[in-house]
Image (cartoon, rainbow over all chains, first blue to last red):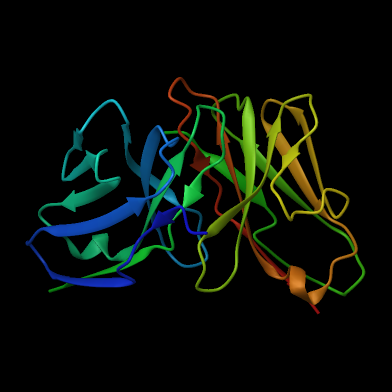
Length: 112
Length: 115
């Protein structure tokens, strides 16, 4: 049972445009959500997170939006840069000391 | 930022042998460390959670006698894959948290290949 879903295996975006990566979850007990960027054969790199009590968090080019009623979150990257090409994982957890539940990832490709 | 290291980065072993993987938090004290596994084209799956000085908590389906976890200090956790078999070949990644917001910072991973 996939509790965190990233339905787009890949996404291609032109350099300079906005990249929007989507994530849905089913477990209403999740209270904290994170986005990670990952290259092959490397560990995930933390990008940005959001608590369930907020609906938006912004850090530079990255903004995460949370819609609790729809159990949906999205990561916006603007403007997209070639170095953003990677696999992006959405993750969620139930409590502060809990492990993370990951989605399957979306491969973002930024085209020049 | 928070740095987590893993050693070794890559290991190849024969079936039936045991392999130890180390995970270290380099610039912070990790009250909790996590071990994940990622099979090709799959997501990261949580295997176990370990708190310093106590027994690890394993996820359903993960054999605690096969995957031995030791978290002896606030900066070091080890995962030992005992009697490894080819189906244990995978990418093992640790993470550590200990900062105020419990954000998990990941190590670079260890590629295990069992022949």
